[in-house]
Length: 329
Length: 292
Image (cartoon, rainbow over all chains, first blue to last red):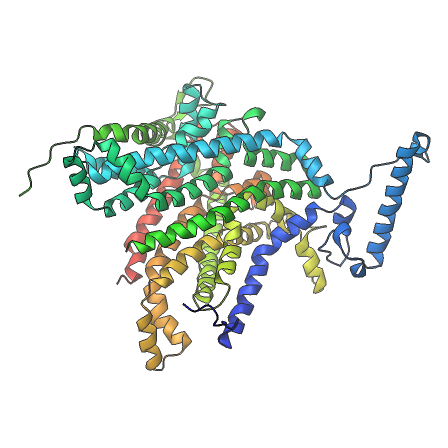
């Protein structure tokens, strides 16, 4: 294809209307995130300012020509506080201005610092990351093994077992919450990593998904390999796994996202702070922080950002995997 | 002729991990919970046999009825709204315009974020004094509302946020469905002079119906299990219990009041409701679906 042909941005006049509608929708979709990030950089004074105007940018990031009267006053006050604080650091004698201790003035990342210090978030991140990685890899291995057996082997009760597995997909999560909790407590697994990880290592959905993929691989390939003395495990490792990278990547992304965002299950099966995952930690922080919106928005931001970054990194893989699976047809 | 293949007994080894866990945490619990729902049990003390008492109590429980009504309210408003919005967006995105990738990413963004984090953000947006929504209303001189603290507005607020959160997922599914519609049908229709609306009514909508049906069934199931946003945005079931939904009620009974038997009776009613609704959809609604 020649690359020097310049494509016009708008090819058809009716596309202007389409773009207008889509952009309006996009603003609605993305604005809560913009608002969240902007608020996370604002001081309490800025956030709790009641008034008619909507101020998007935080004081410390806004170009000065955008400032209204009120904003100028607040910024001047903030500047005065800063100078007072600097002076109090320079001479401890003036540290108490008019009997009151000089407060440290707000700085851009203060909300992040406060949120990060309020809960052991590093621990929550570690727990979540460990759980998500273990579940993603474990469930992919287990599911691909089972899918391999369903796709290639012949054994008694194959169809019945497959149906039983599909049946488990139709049950609502919440109906299983209580008996699962009881079983875990019988196993003495409540409040352990086992409770967070083990029940999620089996995914009927993944088995179903991978089995559909393996069924598309030519059966002759399997039989020829067996005749040549290839063992079944060898075939699985050398042929099946390398060929199934696209569906594995797709499943892996969804499994990781699902674990990272899971809330109800870890909320119920763990109550130790050291075992808390990020979503549970965030909900605890939310109930503690009440209406401290700045730190709350900061905490929401840093729990969302790793996921969004991962999504953008994986998206290339994701798109490639879709392109690859399309090429086979 | 091929010889009858010998049985692969080794196959079971490959199935053991998955089936071991499924049996332990998905199959066994079903029978277990059916048994527990006949007992009164707080997990620590002695379980007391009460027969069908837990189920009988449900029918005299006004809060159970309230939670049923609220759940139906949520489902009846959020499912069609979400389908209408996501289908329209998918139709817009199905044009040969530039920047599709960017739009798709933007609409998908809420899907990948966690319900908890975005619930906190929306809590702030809905805040009566400092929230964005009331400030926007003030711009057009409308009176401020209490939103999540108002029994009338609490549920619509939850619905709006939930639709926003789940929209992108349905958009992607609808886009895939739209791409499966053969292009030559539109060409033929255009030659016959069909306008945009006629093309939608006679080609797009009927041929998209399998996808619509799938999205409808899945969203309905999901809407009956709504929980996290209720838990995060309207603690204790909201003002005047206006957002008390079934799963929240079940959660409260089991993990706050420790009435496990009763909670399981609720879970079973929920399961039967979801199951019969899915069956109804399969038997009656699917008749309107056009499979090529």
